[in-house]
Length: 102
Image 1 (cartoon, helix red, strand yellow):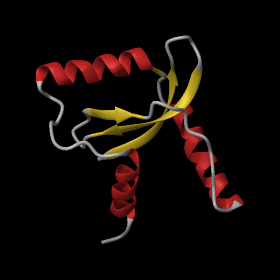
Image 2 (cartoon, one colour):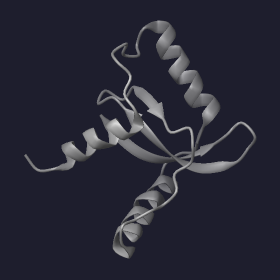
Image 3 (cartoon, one colour):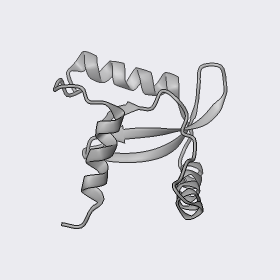
């Protein structure tokens, strides 16, 4: 699984940063429905997250309409996995585990 921050425009024209989750083959799994808010357990953690959020501006802007259409199309064509759904918190735990050295 690949996770990234992206700048996303919503249906009424507001811009925010969202988390996007992709399969390793590039298929979109899901995206956060609410914008990301920077939070850290220390000022250094907060600065690191701000740098990661800044990276979203180096990528093309997406729209919730496009993201929802992609997810819908994948569901209709059977491209989206039909396994058990997991929560965003479970995905974060999984990603944290992948980041640790083997």
